[in-house]
Image (tube, rainbow, N blue to C red):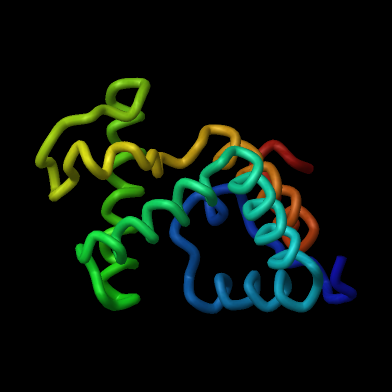
Amino acid sequence: MSSSKPISMTSTQAHNTLPDELRNALYSQLLSGNGIRNIEGNLTHEMQATGFMANLKGYITHLYRSGQCTTHSEAMTLVTEKIRHDTQAKKSNGVTNGVNGINGHSKENDEYDLSLPDRVIREGVKTVRMELNEVCDITYPDDK
């Protein structure tokens, strides 16, 4: 935990979009301690443990080898689109669907499931909450 005073906010403030000044103060607090490193480390661990990183690497390799992209920027655009597509498909159907031709995603690319695993989301949220609790003092209306 940082030696700085915790940032105070109400529960309403915590649920709304944060003003730039407050958001920057949170980032500063998280960066001054181990917060950001802990969040990043946990997310990396969970993505590796669930196989997401291996699928991501395979998909990126496929994009370059197949000629679908030739630059980092093109690859990042296609990866971001595929993550959104696969995650949305999983939310809609409970599993990633193999619909051909939606947003440029063909069956050939469906061998790489880039939907964010529930475990990554669940554990990531836990870690972020834990780290925010270290630097924030959120008061609830019922608190005295």
